[in-house]
Image (cartoon, rainbow, N blue to C red; front, side):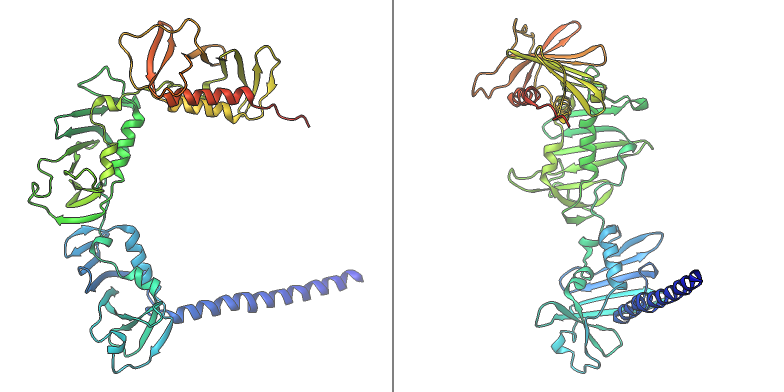
Amino acid sequence: MKWRHSIVYLVVLLLVGGYFYYFEVVGRERKEAAEKEAKKIFHVQSADIQSIRIDSREKKSVQLKKEAQWQIVEPVRADVDQAPLQDLLSAVSGLEATREVASSAEDLKPYGLQEPAFKVRFEVSGQSMELRAGDKNPAGDGRYVQIAGKPAVFLIPEGQWTLLAKGLDELRRKDLFTFKTDEVTGLGIAWQNGGTLNVEKQPEGSGWKSPENPDVRIKPGKVNNVLDQVHFLRAQSFIEDAPGDLPQLGLAPPLATMTIRLKDGTSAELRLGRTDKDAQQLTALSSQLPAAVQVDSRVLQGLPENIQALEDRSLLSLNRDEIKKVRWQFGEASGEVVQKSSDNWDVKRGDGEPQPLKESWRVKSLLWDLNDFEYLTRPNPSPPPPEKPFARLELWTDDKLVASFAWDQPQAGDMKPQSLWMMHSIGPEAVQVDEKVIDTLHKDIGQLLHSEAPRQQ
């Protein structure tokens, strides 16, 4: 009969557990939710808000309406910046009172509510509601507010007030462009000094070409960097809506004009105005944002001045995953690493036996660096390679040599560009590289030479 007693105990335990869960857990959660709802000043959902108007002494009044999508309709028609808009809607619907200061205040002057410095009025289902804000409380951590038409005065946290106190420039869209980078088919830049460049995307993702300079090999990553930089460019401040006097704004003639051609046959244009050498901002005008604005002047540093700035000068244009073997000769030392599996390599130094490489990531580090390196110039004519170079580096697939480099040891303290020879099937080609390239290669190979083998378990 013991099993019957066990069942009775189990039933009792389940009943007790159910009672505890329902009354202690669910009940507590419901109580907390009810208390939170009771603290709310407005019992509305943000999705139900149809319009908002904000009047402030310190900022321009602004009105937004939810049409097909949210739009600013006063004092100008403009698209909305979604992040601050959602903060505003959430602040209105979730606004909570810290406490009630006065249930019926006849004198509103002590609270700064006799002539409120800030008002936010919104509409839900045809019904208007308005919040009026006054002074900070003496502690400085809250602000006195009142609902229009009701006598009570509440205190709300200063943090909630910050989310409410938005102005036109904070709520309007700041992105200068709306195009998507995969929609771009062409890019042109014209500089005030006469410099120009023009590139077009080739069919089926085969890269970019310059119609005027078809022999220049364009590096796709450089074009994409320019497009990304412009695509994410944001206004830091607004100067003038629908600007008319472009010369006064330094936009006629502009310092630079960028034209971005799109798949649908349209184009977008960006004008960048003149700026002082040490200025942190410059004037800009986008065809997709009808206002003259100030943007970060560092955007100029990322714009190529000519087609050569987009040229692919990579030392290595191979997929790193294709490399299965790396050989080196470094001064009097030599060796190689051979891939055994995805993350495992064997290393052989000189005439020694192959051993597992403990720090296999060092091979990837070397290949990463080679992929990132670019040469500075190609000397013409190309000087012959040294008979006995100080260092040589070879990259192999399973059984094919796909890239080979050779260089001499730089003189101590020599900060000038260094010669590096790339070995092709038709012969060696010299390029000039930054001295940091040679220095990094020395460090990468040196780490492979001295990397320890893993300890045996």
